[in-house]
Length: 342
Ligand code: AMP
Image (cartoon, rainbow, N blue to C red):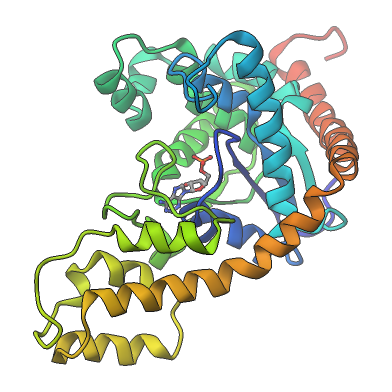
């Protein structure tokens, strides 16, 4: 039911610990916008299953036996729910749920599959990347954008806060909505991506996009030691303390920009004039990240001490999301001819 507010939909995959790229690129926007929008925020556990074939859900010893995959996925899902609450999502304001509690998305994805061509989906970046890296790509990876279209279109998203890496997926959701509406009549709203300019691609400690699969992350709830270790390994050139440096070419400065505070202007001019070494810049950065993470970590520890509370919240959120999803699916089933009462 529309509350009069616009609808925001977004999710994160439970494939490992979230990092500050996930936070600044997408999760922060969910928190910032939860008063203004009717928010459906989910844990993308069905999407996470696409990592099974590549072993990404295995535990640290590399055990990807069925039992371990299941245990890890369930644990990652619970952990991500705790993370969402720790960063400030308010379950009274947002519908927080796990994707698999709305099986209607899988049903809708099948219907979308039947109006989507293979050459169209073959152009998706994620599929092309997976093909370049892996010998055998699963149907799940190929079809990922269609499941994501269903995630977005079923709750009627007006806006989808995501990082730049998801831009093409939102375009696919828009194309899919258009195609469905053209064939079966006006059904789905046209979603808009919300990609926040300065944090569209948060760089990792190696300068590439920060990503769970590149080993270049700074964990959103990392300890002070982990933060310092990650920051200290950021590669720099060999310029001495007094030499002028180009902040735009420095991987350390790129992360300083996440904390656009009063110090940033001063830091920039010290880079340009000379007078700051990379070691000092890294120490300042590690302190800033630690100061930002410490309260989140403390809040997370508190929430994590009561997992039953979190599971109950997810069950309640799942029921609410499923009710909304079912209502929309009834309309879709009628439109495509899957029910007798047209
Ligand atoms: P994922 O972990 O792939 O489910 O990503 C969750 C959200 O974080 C998505 O909206 C991504 O676009 C966003 N994201 C992931 N990595 C980055 C990054 N390095 N910079 C900005 N946003 C990111």
